[in-house]
Figure 1 (cartoon, rainbow over the protein chains, first blue to last red):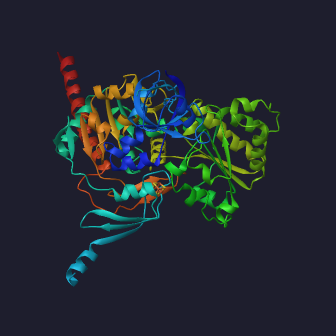
Figure 2: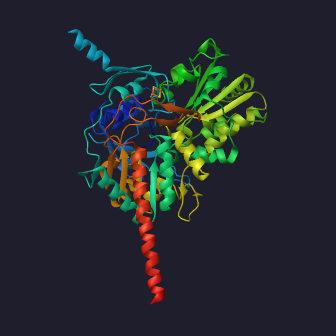
Figure 3: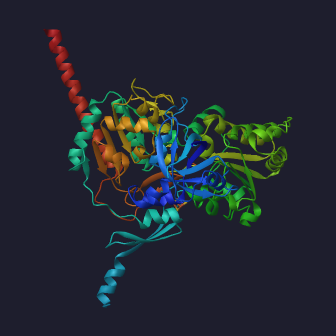
Length: 114
Length: 458
Ligand code: SF4
């Protein structure tokens, strides 16, 4: 069953090092296709590190791997992922006359695909 | 090893001191690079962080054609001709990027967009563009990073993760750096981190305040009220996730410090509230100046994104999202910003200078870029280069090309290149396109004039 969560895309060191090597190589691809999930949410949804999950926003859908984060690091209901092609699929086009699409506060439905 | 061989290999190792790393807005200009001139490789990058090391040590000149036209190898001249034809025939071209190139290339890019009557926007619009809008509304109390290093005794990071995006920010400028009035480094400073999650930047903080997602504006506004001595309902905790006691404690620290600084990241400008969030934090710093010296300054990601704002402002009067269709610059975020123009399908051509919107724009914008003729200049193969009609391979700024870049605090830094490249710089390619477009437009004007004369005579 899908659950609604808030996704925060951001920068990570792995993604930065990966893009310097090549955006078409494993390091960058891995960094941008791994979503961090609160461990309690993971347990409830029957997910383990490395499981695939589908993220669906009002604008698109993408499939990524998941990895757990402790509750004091990432609150329940919040997801984190490094910027990259998968986050482009989820962002909306409305910039509210600012030029900036909402890029850090994305409502997504998360669903296990295993 | 024979003496001659040894002398030869030693002679081909060069050391470049005070080189500048252009990966992030810290723009560290204390790099000591060891360069193997025979192998054309940088073998050591002293003082660089993990990202700087990756930039220098992974640098190698990719053996790619000078240009690709529709994915097929082409000469530089052919690429310039194709790009010039695209721009001379476009009615509403968008010029975007500029945060990873020199100010000299940025300046030339503005001249080109001016000539063709197009629209220019930098990666600022999808980073601190909302902060640029807020600055115009409420002003800014600011300082250089040098001043902050020497004086700040209260440092607040808000909605940013410098440990991963600007790794030397702490050591060079604001946490463990030794300053004139902060000789005991971190012992002389209180570090606060405000964020919705515990990032890798949190461990250096003395105080971590976890704000509820989407409640930064409310927290900032409550802090402003407390600074002004107004009553704040304790129920504010339900909305913000932060207790009134924690807020009051922070306000006391802010009012009583000697010199305070609010460094804020895209956790404010990219999230719900955008420019209102940025305006709130800038206003909080202004309010605090009634009690002490306080500044607020955005943390900038790309090496020369600050330069893009400065060059475009200096040339047009506006920092980003500027249109020249009427022959004079007009600024209107939302209308003349790149993601909007591509996603709406307004742009009929694009020139992307040192950026990769093909990997980080919205899907609707990427889909439109695939439909129109795009020109890309980049040292590496990128997602945008793959979808472009013309993709130029250019040399790397800072490593192969000298020039100027602006640090995130607006201080210009000179670049010290260490290796030659067979590829031209961004500036050289843009200049060549400019020259050819100028010729094409002149010829067109002449032909149009002659046709008009003929029509009148007939
Ligand atoms: S902090 Fe930024 S500029 Fe300094 S070395 Fe690291 S990546 Fe380069």
